Image (cartoon, rainbow, N blue to C red; front, top):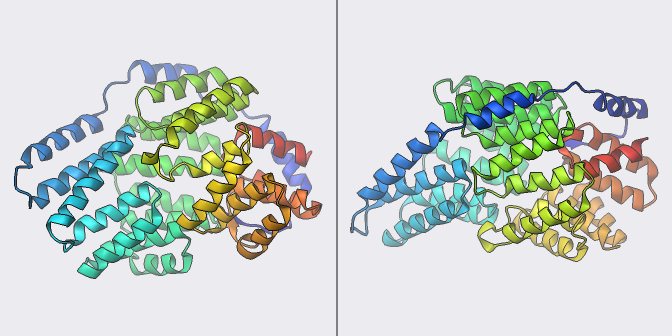
Length: 431
């Protein structure tokens, strides 16, 4: 994230736009063809299935079988990370809640696991409540500091998150370096964020899952920085050690689209990923491919399919950010965007979510309300590229051209985080 400082020269933004249009081709079609042709069932998935079957088989008729149920639940969540089936998380939650019910809410471990699962599902208030219950029973300091950081960070309690991060300080700990990277990214310290995530990667040489997680995150950070060649190298390295890393494969698809302009190759990648995961994420990427091609019919088709899936109650609030983009864009339903953004504030009231709400208000012609939200909750706070663009649009509508341009320039520094349609609009505003 970046804290906006209105000091960037227009020349630098124009130079960046020119550079974007003169990028060398990065993603080789032969590489993608080889990946797809030789793709087999990942070892991580087969190993996970064995674990699931093992722990499930050990669950007997004993209602107080906490150990086996907990391990079974943990492996269901691990499968969610591999195959994207949200039902695995809800099933795990049911098992953990059953344990707590049987033990009269006196076991800290299941509550701690429920807190982490709630974060996955973007139920951040629930995560906070489960964590409080675990702490009341008693948990180790290391568990307390790490999970408290995770909850506070998502809720926007940055001072509290920082304090817990300081308490868990251990330069040789993967979790510490991973979280330091997240905090640095939030503060707009991108080079520091990359350095910390690379350090996290170096600490887990013998754990292919954690290593690929770190590498994939480094790839995302390099994409954020516009260093797509380095991002590609990270994604490829991750896939080499863990071919179940579909996130990295989609990262390569994104580079093929926004850098190389290879719509067909990007589509091929995202459609392949669709066959390997139950997550709606690759479907959202197909919306962006259609945007890139300026195919409004296909964009609307994919957007409606995506909406139908992620508005199912099982996904909770996981995709609100993307729905707000669609409702203020191709789906043309600003009323839904406003309602969704307002509801999201009850889940987590952060500068980011307030930006979504302000932009939704703007799209409903409530400029004065949007500006009031900006002044009270957003001004001077760290924002990502999308939210910087949103605030640029608000300043533009408010006839504050200088401020609008400053926001647009700041958003442009992380151009590859933006959708193709927003990217085109941003370029037109900076010409």
